[in-house]
Image (cartoon, rainbow, N blue to C red; front, side, top):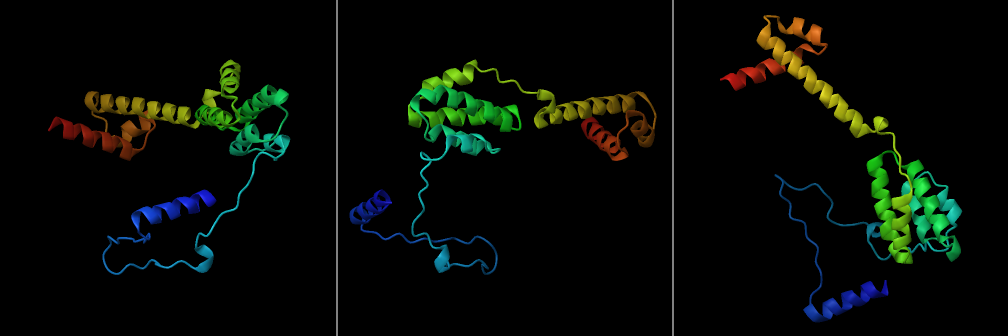
Length: 194
């Protein structure tokens, strides 16, 4: 806090200005938003939470990956560093919902480990530990399959429109899609043929 106040004091002395906050309203009519803060909403300082004295095991037992990450900054004997890092990676695997999220948390772990000067060890552990993930349960994977199936069905519908004289309802029942799905493809094909 002293550094922030000190910086603000230097800035005020150098530039001889007082900060004034403004909002430019771009809407139509009179703005309805409040322009003054209540006393309890005014920023006058902040609480400091020191992670170092936190119990490492408590952080590691969390179901929230962001909390598990903090274990790297908690207090533990130096000789247990490798064991703690391996436990953190294991817990991140268990608490991450997909491979992409796990990758993000491992990158954050490496960044946080720089504060303890254990980045090299962290990188070594994350690279050597087998990070397996059931891709078939991943949301994006399933979404991709769904899009692929929809694309395949669209191709079948196009071929049926071109090669048969079936009406939209008949095509929809054969391909197992909705009638609007078939109608939409038919409209797109007509636009392309114009």
